[in-house]
Image (tube, rainbow, N blue to C red; front, side, top):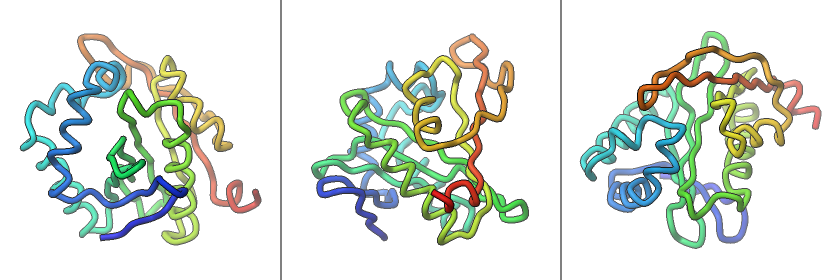
Length: 181
């Protein structure tokens, strides 16, 4: 559907059902590292689960209510990023992202977030972008901090994951803060 370049060997493209096998393989190979902070790996047990997720994302895209894209590096899918929703009434969205364990530390998630932020403010004309992370997830938390987000607070016991409650730290970035840079 679309391809947005980040750098020479890295780009984003909206997830399509034809990506289901490759995306599932990446999730399966990174199940433990992803599952430490996210619930979806536990519920992704076969390619059909990944295909259903992509179909749901495409449906959201068709309703102008967010979507997920694959993060591609050297012609391999290495992770995913998405607008979890688009709240048109309040002109805001939340970005979610993850990388396969072998692709962490390359700056790929930060670069993908930067592109999504730019799109949210310039193309979608939104006023606010949020990123929510587990406070203990130091690598993920570093991304909004690096991109100039403001830590707005922490929601205690936000979600139950593997029998343990995890908090969520909410980071926010306003259009005026981004555009001024």
